[in-house]
Image 1 (tube, rainbow, N blue to C red):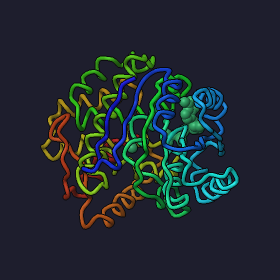
Image 2 (tube, rainbow, N blue to C red; image 1 turned 135 degrees about the vertical axis):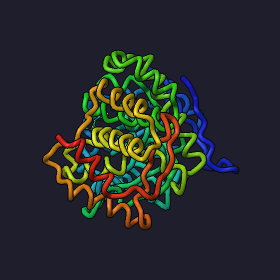
Image 3 (spheres, rainbow, N blue to C red; image 1 turned 90 degrees about the horizontal axis):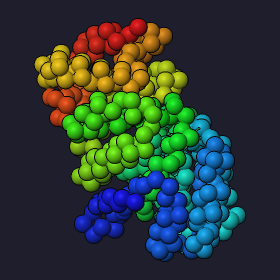
Length: 364
Ligand code: ADP
Ligand code: ZN
């Protein structure tokens, strides 16, 4: 099991470790037992992950004499709302959860975001642990302490920065992950290569077949490098006020595509198209070479991530979503652009005409 330390403040009160390995549920049990974090643990998980992994995890935790309960909610983003939060909170009260209890999020981003949020508000906050089971959660959402739920008015509108006590990443979970979910996470890994790690990018280019086969060794390498990159950025900018924005590479246009599709296009797919658009904009503005732009597009296509915007998605709708983003942040859209692979920067003055032209090129 590899351990990556996340150092968040000088007193180290909110620092924690990310542990990565294969088949490590027993080890996870031991580490939790040794940590003495709580007297009572409540696993929170969705219906799919529960049927796949509840027995294995509960057995591992009970084998080290932990006092454990489990709360299950229906799988899907649709559950990430105030109703589910209140339902889970009432179950916590019925189970006698108090300030000596800790939550364990077992699942994808929905479970992690919602469990972290509940931990941040239940009895004025109790500790929680992340055990992410999707590739997306393993490389992105479980690290960094962003928690939250959706409101009818929009996604992630209610939430808090609240750091987990530890993150345990077992790569075995990825074996049962549906293809669509796998691709979602892959897109964020490509993003890390593009914004921070030329060597990771080179590996991805070389290993497209092993990526598709989900080779365990390669998964370990990709997940570990991705976690280290995210860790590095979150350590500098825990509250998302500055450099953490480079993690939004491909996301300004990606979010517009995602939202305008009524969330029918999954996040990773939308980001993959957004990354191509951002690379093209970087080239048009003479920052990025056509060679690097080509490599990015080629990699995305060769691992079967999408490269175009379906014509069913309204151009005006997308542009207006991008404009709304812009109003929130001042006058201009803060785009993450590239000077080369591994060298991103924030550009505050991308003209709408260029965005429009680029999206137009990518529509088919
Ligand atoms: P994301 O991490 O992409 O936000 P979600 O929490 O929405 O993911 O989970 C996506 C879907 O994948 C859900 O239906 C969830 O139940 C399912 N899922 C999560 N982990 C696994 C796994 N290891 N194997 C199979 N299905 C999983
Ligand atoms: Zn993302």
